[in-house]
Image 1 (cartoon, rainbow, N blue to C red):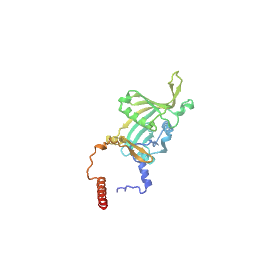
Image 2 (image 1 turned 30 degrees about the vertical axis):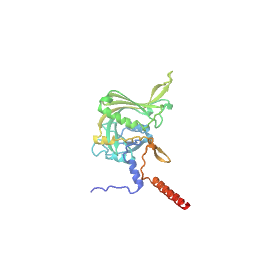
Image 3 (image 1 turned 45 degrees about the horizontal axis):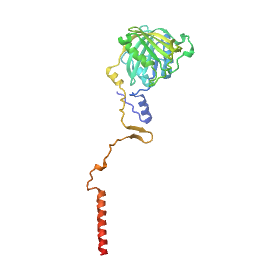
Image 4 (image 1 turned 60 degrees about the vertical axis):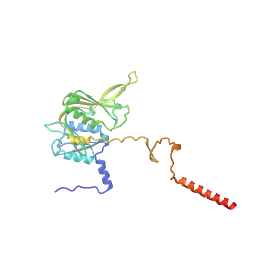
Length: 309
């Protein structure tokens, strides 16, 4: 028996559905952080640090979730349900097993369906609490970070190409048109091998250099870890084309402007009219009226002349 499709009956419900629908101009992406059936202390700390870095735009569930297997058919149903429920388009899922210890799955969704996935293992992890530094250098909440990808494997290895895209989407923050020069942090990702990346989070410290350009120093504030790519799944070509659509910019119309009071205004340029060279026909109403008046005046003058005689 096929379940009936529920249709919104009120305007409020329709507006809520439109908010969750895919858009050509995207809003800020939210991140959903989930725990698997079993997690380790290292993985719990990793998920907590990721939530701390993105807490202005993230949702974290602390309960354990069963039957989530993102790379298996049907195993991503729960992820898609949570993505729809929280309106999150980025997913971080942590699990731990003997076969895949300290396992982290990074995923993106389109229209609340799984778009692509990257499975990585976390090694040599250092939490944010383990670093000692001047707390005045701590990055501000919601600030835009810089990214540095070092190594030729980011251009040659397909796994690291994919991981680079997902990391940029995960940590880039809000999309802005202008950026202040006061950038206070940077993510440094170094490709050690075709499947391993060393990632660290640093604060930027500006010092005097004797010139107008200050000298920058990196102060590691954590977390830092080795990311080993285990599996990855690229999006289907048809889905990728659908997700990559962008809004078409309207062509600029010449001599058209918008006014808050009068609305849309336009200028029309007319060539100089030479009235003296215009040909006038005899059917013009003004000429007919002049003829009638001239005829009446002529008849009136004749009557006066006759009466005088």
